[in-house]
Length: 311
Picture (cartoon, rainbow, N blue to C red):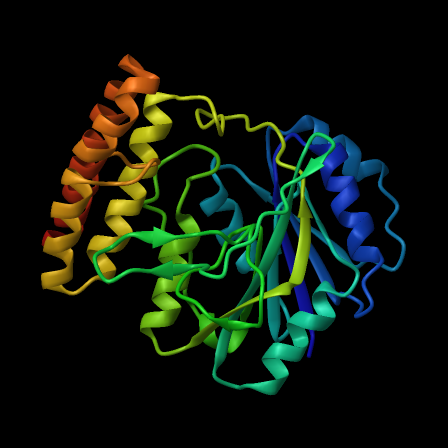
């Protein structure tokens, strides 16, 4: 099988260099590496002009629209081969990453996507907790991630994580990442829309903790600053999650999801119960998060209804 690796990047030349060096060290040589670069990203263009890849078939794609969705869709248009593997510029695939990915696709023609663990590095510490439940969508709409904590045997999942996910070209065909995802950078939950669409089409998605990358979360250059609250980023996150689930869940489960989301929610997408739980420790911040979550739900509902009315 021929493998293409797709990497969207923005203003992280040192991280990108580390990622590319890891691809050079793969036990299964990569057939093509596509790096998608913003037109205004002078730092990365300068780095790539000086970078001398050793046995690395590098192909650079320029994109003018901000956000990971536009970058990945531009990259997908340039993919060649049987398998496309996507990772972030701040990730370092383990040497046997492509070898293990290929093994899954070869053993079962029904597998459309493969993902694995991203070992998150925070300073000098590696998050080494463990979870058995990974990448699952519960019946009422709660999504359990835990991709960075997964242990155990390979198993079927509902959702893969953007930093470590691979797809069979035959499975994704003309499928593209949803351009309705809000945000100007990370566009959180973009991969959920993509992988749930594959699941809905009947393809199997596999999570294997041994398909691993080291993840060094780097600075983001948009409104989403990871652990720091930003109202716009919070609204965008909840909008994206809401839109994806409203379009994936059947009618009854859709209604249950909206009720649960508004009344309960999660730490990332607060409902009233989560607001009350966080109120003693976070005070006014909990209220801001809850209000942003409710606005995000409403915006997601509006986007969903608008799309339905146009189609």
